[in-house]
Image 1 (cartoon, rainbow, N blue to C red):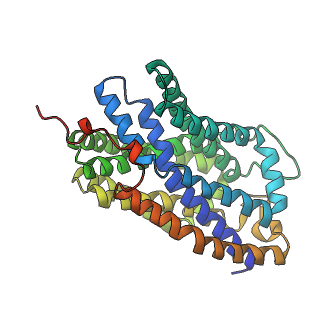
Image 2 (image 1 turned 180 degrees about the vertical axis):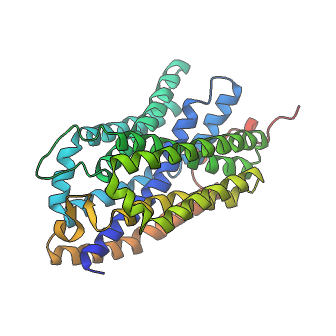
Length: 344
């Protein structure tokens, strides 16, 4: 493995981390949007606040990591990429800002009307942002980003629409599984059962869309399709199997184990995309070797990644550990009337 390939591999690992951890947070906004306005809807939103409150901002560290590594390690690729998808990237940034501000404003809003407005903005941005991320991935995967012929409309394509749809569904799937486990852990059986049903439903829908997506990719992104049938096939098989295992574990009320298999399923999809795209960075146009920066810069990036891993990963694991045990985010914990649930 060359230094450029190692940097690209680190880049894809960071993309995978953001897809899994950030995806679960974005998916919580999906369920917030469809929680309803009844007492059950209020309880669902309080569970969401409790679950993502301590950790959701921390997950954006992976996005920053990806952008810095792409910009520094593959500068020409970053230039072509940012020029081709500058509109969706600006909208992604706007969505992240709106989502974060609205999440905070909702909690401290002085009135029900302002809280509802902030909640709608939070939920809407939670759908818009992953959809745009998926469209960007689709533009790259379909081979439409050509440095020699920049076109700012290339992110509107069948593969991009598929990527955006799958991104939203995958985020919703992850969030449903995570929220099911959290509700069970907090002693909220009704909410756990509600999210268990949602997990099964969204997993089935995602599976159907993925199956249809195979046809779309075969027609619209043939290079990626060939790669997925080659290097990426084992990982895609793992993703499909893990998805089915997640549905089985969820059906059997094994929520903690279902969360692990759901993470494996999503991670395998992202890594399968990377393996299927190899050796391309911009499919059909720029390979990893062609787009790599100066060898000294690449070596420095590898060292920086190791140092960052030693500093950041233990802190993130500690944060998740404390959040799992309700030792942080006291302000966002469910009020006493949610724990335990009232009996009929």
